[in-house]
Image: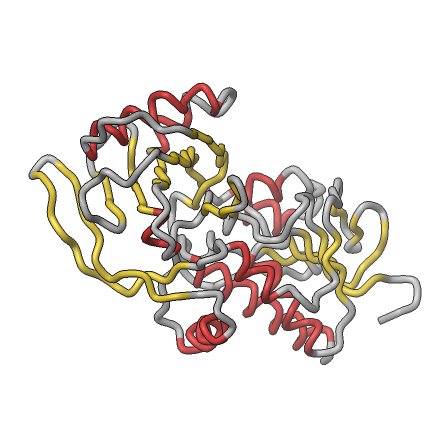
Length: 320
């Protein structure tokens, strides 16, 4: 790397950005990993309530990629991840039924702890808001070898100079849906036995998880995710949606007591609405890379693989 240029600037310390930066660091390429939030994790977000974490973003993770399986096994060995369930409930017009699928993994300390574990030796700068990515490439006016935007496309679009036509076109092609996440703590566990439930055809709810079961501590906490349609009408004042989310969960599960705590988190860009076919990342001749779960199915594994693959592509280019 030339003395007057930074190495690679990775913007976004979710799992895609962390996976990308890790590949670069292991290859000896200088990296600056910048995150606008106070913590690492991105949409694998957790928040503590009276010292106990609850997951606000991704509800769980699944694994079918051998390389990602090795990462998950490392988390398990470190006591950070646990197998949760392969069976969830589905509510719908036909009633309540069990549905089986892949093993879902959860994290006793919250899914954010998994990203933090991967980032433990990376140079992450938090509370660092990036304003512009320009040709050169240049990040906030400083030249670098490459710039990676590991974030939802609409957020990346706000940073990109229109002259970066390839990257701008790639992010504008992405479509994203919104969601609200409600954390509900009750006085006691009074719901029917279930681990998590897909809620089909509901005007408000899409998924409800028993967070005490998911985390393994038996806490009387449920986490509910709303439909995009409901979220779209409450993005300006998400906390005002709390009573409606609570009532919908109580009606669904027949809960007699109100929640003693209701917290609502807004996800303007919760997940990509369309799975992209083809490459697992974007890297153009301008030196701009894009990574995240928009390049594949909306899964934690997809985001990790996107960042990993982009990191490897940058290593091959920069060390050629």
